[in-house]
Length: 99
Image (cartoon, rainbow, N blue to C red; front, side):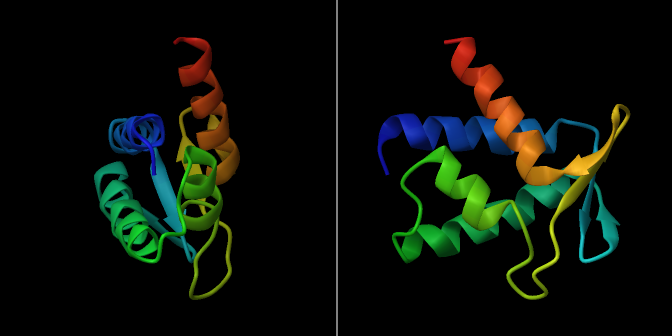
């Protein structure tokens, strides 16, 4: 993974951690800081398998759905509930437009 991808993923993980949103995984809600830890653990696993080369890979392979149940991850924010993958893709777009 190149430096740009590492930076973008790091920014996305920080966004999750400081979002104030609840992360819904397999029907249970988790605070943002715990969600970040979970996604970091998935990222570490995927990196060891050389399966992440971009922020898009991270979103698709680590932050879209449970690898155990197949259920899609969601976030519940003050602005409403939505799929975590859409939420993160929107943030990635915002980050890239700001550069």
